[in-house]
Length: 232
Image: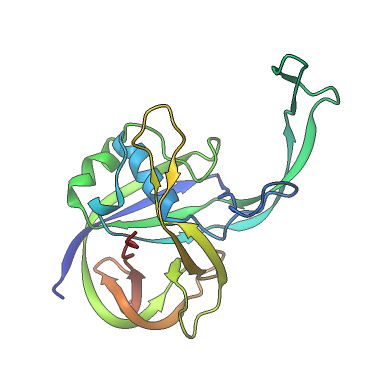
């Protein structure tokens, strides 16, 4: 494979929380990093339209300064006898939510036509919830050189990946949002290893396909994984 031109975008924020799909009540846990569907959602917000998975390959590294549980006040609701929502008779509630502080996302996008989306974003991208606002620090051109191995940072790798620690998660590849007035429908689900650690600069030596060395990498052995979307 020849050298590939791509965009390297850095996004930063104050907080991030990516809801774990298997946790519906109690303490709201976050996945260790955004799913690929989250990444597509951030790109779509910047573009002001739904960016489909078949428009570009993506790769990313997700870092944060620290992580902890945040205590939040919640507004609770109940149904009255007429089937209408009203404030809960016991008032507001409290809940814990796992939060990543000062997140940083290094995003690699193969489709160069998306440059204007990051230079002049239509809507504000977010690290998960609506209040987890992100901003774009910079967007620049890079060249991605295919390599067989290298030191990989915190990202999502297809499971299994030998020699790499990490939490195993099952996450959607993308969501369909093409029917007006109806909820989004998930596409295929993939099994991934969330490569740690998001705190610090530790990296893992890996050998696999779809690894690339970026022309702006800090070291010669640093690589990024470009995701191949699952087929239905």
